[in-house]
Image (cartoon, rainbow, N blue to C red; front, side, top):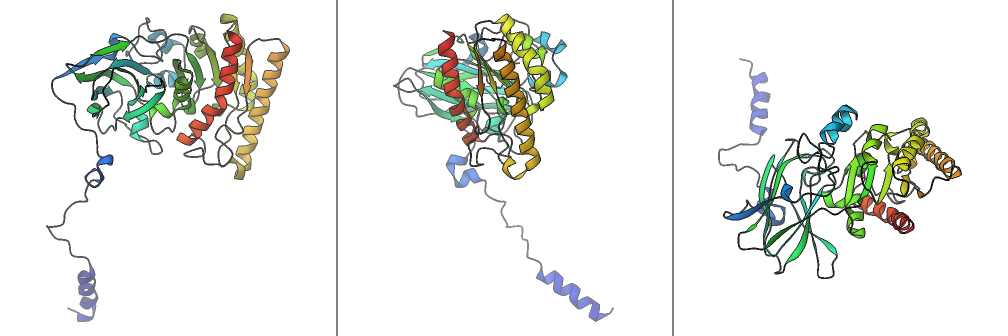
Amino acid sequence: MNLKLLIPIVFCMLAQPMVTAQEKPAVKIGELDPEMAEKKQADDGLSWHDVTAWGVEGRILPADDRQRWFDRFPLMAEKTVTKSVWNLSRHSAGMMVRFKTDATAIHVHYKLLSKNLAMAHMPATGVSGVDLYARDDDGRWRWVQVTRPSAQEVKVKMIDGLAPGFREYAAYLPLYNGVEFMSIGVDASSKFEGLTPRTKPLVFYGTSITHGACASRPGMVHTAILGRRFDMPVVNLGFSGNGKMDAAVGDFLTQIDAAVYVIDCLPNMNAQSVSEKCIPLVKQIRAAKPKTPIILVEDRRNTNSWIVPARDKHHTANHQALKTVFQTLQAESIPLLYYISGDNLYGDDSEGATDGSHANDLGFMRQANVFEPFLLKALDESR
């Protein structure tokens, strides 16, 4: 054997780090930081309360047949809306269940429709989590806890050590996943009361942003934030990539006894489709609901459009198309019609989105702040 060839091979072998059987796998972050740990499994001996027994908000036409109880649209929609809208309507975005209890620990048991618990740019807490709020002593909704799904079926203790008292809670359902079943668990000795869904919701029809991308948890979408601020129920008809002012969706909008309609579809449209489809949708709603306010919303500007001229031009064209539509409708004396500019929906510092297009929690809070005065005016003037 040629020793000159062997020496470099031996040297490379000796240079490799030694791996021994005693090496331990990386420690899970939850073992280093308890606040990062998965939730504890549910206790034994609980009293479980099926939320379908009293109902959830955000589920339109509740008496109609459904393929699954937690679908946003009834079964008859499968024949009329596009296949994509139908599939996305299986997500429980915007649904919220209210209850009262004096329990000092709250558990939840639910099964998700899809095993895909998260997305690359949106965590499992937002895609598949259940997000819990409670009213404080002043009647304000305040955050309590969120589940951290790691499997398709979740049965966990959400929180314990709660302050004593019989109080109202609200649990928001997953944004980008569906739900097969859901129950709230409390100690068998605790008082528990399911609260009937409220009527006259704020109704939002829109795109992936309305759908909830990319909130860290379900209660952080602007629709949910506004629901808490106005203390009103919400219907979320956001369809990711498919909010396009479709007449077939309009047929279901007109069947809702809404307090106000918010049409926020421009992120999925271009100037031509806005010009073609907006006026027919507004007139479709107005014919069925002559006294219900309608708010038209420009698309947000992508947070990096300041440096991407083609994208900025697209937003500008969309905005001009919607302005023209709005002026036409005003000239025809369409009543209770309102308009929200999109330039600063996410703020003006480019920090309001996760990926340029979809809001982060900061962007959703800013969007809620922009929407709030228009909703307040619309509701006041329609009374």
